[in-house]
Image (cartoon, rainbow, N blue to C red; front, side, top):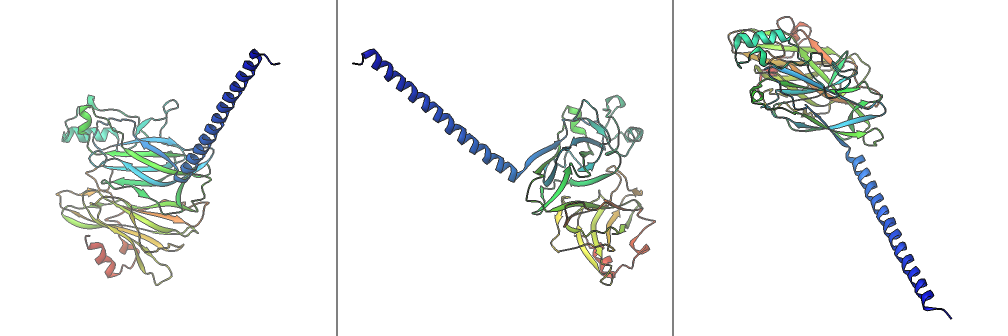
Length: 389
């Protein structure tokens, strides 16, 4: 005969076991769901990539025509691919923004990973004298902020993105990416922001302009072509009340074929039209238009719709047509009162080991260099470079 107390104890034990089993079962289900959710997130993150903000750390530049840089270290242990650029800037604050790839940044502080330095070409003395003489912005010398000075990069540098004039986001073609980090020649990305006007900062405002990158990991199966940027630029000077051409030209001598997919133009106020061409070494030196743009419109990377392949021995050339209606000459320089003539070619290569080693094509510009110095320029090309879009 079983006692009531024994029956009660057995019943209680059964209840406790049922409760424990329920708790364990719930935990297992929850862990399973959590694992599935985590895996889903990992797959989504792997597919979409990560977003990497490259922003100024609330800087307050006090000098007009200030160029500020800050560096971002890439991974030493794995590489990644940049596939999209998302601007976080307006033309009211930033005249233009560049992202450089460096092996070593031009300045760094061991305990300050977000160090900011003055990476402009002008010396402080020149800027101070310019501001003092013109007194355009009313700055006193004791009001000026002093940033440590240095180049953008120590050693070689390459441009991987440029932005100006409220240009929208740029997404690279499918399968194309900029390789950065381990195994590449880019250990750091350096953000450079050109602040042409700084009135708002006198009221205490700060700035965090920059670019957010979307990046894919090294084990992605989505990238099979490497991206690069070739910059065509000039020096030179334009006389007062005159129209002139700022021409660049280089022969492609590396044993690599590049496929341009986007172009960007950049001048300051005097630029009317910028054109870039490929000159075919084999097809009777035929000129093929790469891109043409009005540099006074948003200075974004515009897509190249025609299929173009630039091969060893071909030439790449660019022309900035400028008109100076001022009463004084204007030279190429870094400030808004100077000029610039830049034509950017964004391209990909059908390989994953490397792209062009030569990143910049530079010529001295007018009055010492024109296309006609070394080339026979077809009349229709000259006419095309004079037609303002």
